[in-house]
Image (tube, rainbow, N blue to C red; front, side, top):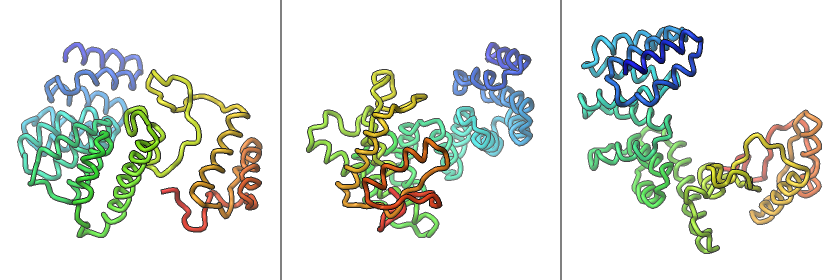
Length: 300
């Protein structure tokens, strides 16, 4: 860690705070927590984050106390450096293995780092001791986002309704995500899709998680991890027209007709927004900011 701390100091002297933060990532779960806390304090002092600096100072001084470790991990998550929160929160949970608060915060840190499989393993490791709300709900969420749709479908079907009504919208949203994902996978299998809901199935996952339909997939960088995503690419006139045509096909297949189409203020946006009304038979509107159908104003 000495070399990493030297790198942090060197980068801070160069006013490269983002670089100093990045330099700690490889050491975030191997270095002693005391040294991680000292490095985090240096970063927080430079950024003017008094809450994080104070929590890091206390964690460096009392790295054996669960409360200090929790406060440090919590501050790291709140300040957008969740990768530094995992080690202290994991250690705090080891010291207090039955703490639901520590478990939830560690899951939150792993989620922020897109480490959904690890979060699911952490939660499922509790076995029958795992409460339904919110812990099992979080297990379903992370299992789904880790790509294990079979387990997510099994778990969500057994998840009881929450006693606290504030969780009801989350339960409904999650149930729709799992339902759409399962329906999409089965439909793709019937159509002969080679890997429905595999790592490269951008369209399937987008529909399952958001309820949205991707009209076109980017042909660029497919084998470099983009898997159909667009990045820093302006559509040609042909691609714009193709996207609008596919929108019409999707609406026809769904049996929907929008009641209005919003036009954004820019000239290019107005040009792009004028063809859909001609396709759907409804007049454009410059006052509304959403595209609505008679039954719902949301795609989910």
